[in-house]
Structure formats: structure tokens, C-alpha cells
Image 1 (tube, one colour):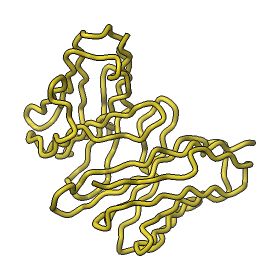
Image 2: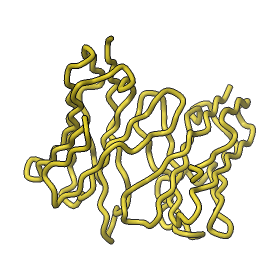
Image 3: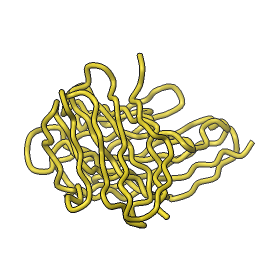
Image 4: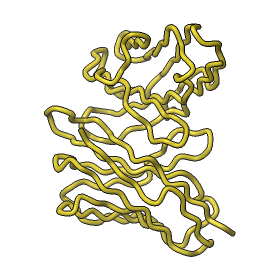
Length: 116
Length: 114
């Protein structure tokens, strides 16, 4: 099955600096890569996603890059703000029929702290 | 539009007792998921429904866990009997269609087994 590794497990940045979280995946059949933000006591919330036919996607201060050859993808947050503090999860999924498909496999999470 | 609703938010029981969690997905979402989230870990899939059919329950511990999704809308996840190691957050999620990849999560039900 799919295995997703996420680094770092904790990350502290000064407000206004950039934050980068990296993930690798093992199953070359994975073709959908979402990122979720989870605040304390809440469920994960989708913040951005990317599909395997795209190399980069940006939405205001957040961006995601995907390298299919190397099987890794990254989340970039620029101009960080205190409200960006949360746990971030990467995930991978295959979205076509077949064994193990449609199963969203998560990384272990990165706790981001933005210091004012 | 209302999000995924779960109840109860918190539950404390003694080991060997039964417990049930309820989930109401976003209206019109055909696919429903139950995930288990241990402290400091990412969510792990327990079961996936497409309408009322459980299409992937390979990671559901069937000796003590059961789930149902009557009429293809609300779902219930049950544990009987609960063990100490079942203490975790149980997350429900839904998506419009399987394969779109966009899952919407509820706030979770936190279970503590004493």
C-alpha cells in the first residue's frame, strides 16, 4: 500500500517568514495530493491540492509543488501569520479504479508555530 | 451549507463498555468515510461507503468494530467492547463522489477509554 513520509514533524518560524513542509510517497499510481490544516479540537480542513498532471499550484500565500519522478511534493507558506499556526497534513490518493484506490493516506503531520 | 456533523464530540467510557458515534454528511455527498486519528498521528481509514454500500472495510477491526449507513445518508460507527487502545479521535468525512479526492471532515468524536 501507499506510504507517505512527512518532514519536519515540528516547525517554528518568525511571523512574516516562509515555511516549507515536504512529503514523499511510495506508490507511483497516486495522482492526487491534498494538504490539510488541522487546528486544535477541529477536523482537518483542505487548504490546497494538486493533481499529477500539474507541477505547481498557488493560492494567495500558499503553494504546492509536485515532482512525480522523485515522488515528492511540498507545501510553501509565504508571509506567515500567527493564524497559520496549526498541524498540517499531506496526503496521497489514487483516483482511478484498482486495488487500493480512493484511499487517502496521510503523513504524520507537521506542527507549525508562527512566532509573533 | 452545513458541514459534516458528528456526535458526540466527547465520550468517556470504561473498558469493555460499548460506544457509538454518529455522522451526518454534507447533503448530496454519496461517499462517506470513517477515519481513526491517534494522538500525534495522521488520520487512518477505517471504512468507506459509497451510498449505503461499504466498499472498503479492509482496515476495520471487525471483531469489535461495526458500522452502518442506512439509506445512504447518516452513518453510525460502533465499538463493542471498547479497549484501552481505542482511545482516539474518530473522524467522519464525506465527498461528493468517489474519485474526486476532495474530502470534507467533521470535527471528530474524541473517545477516552478508562
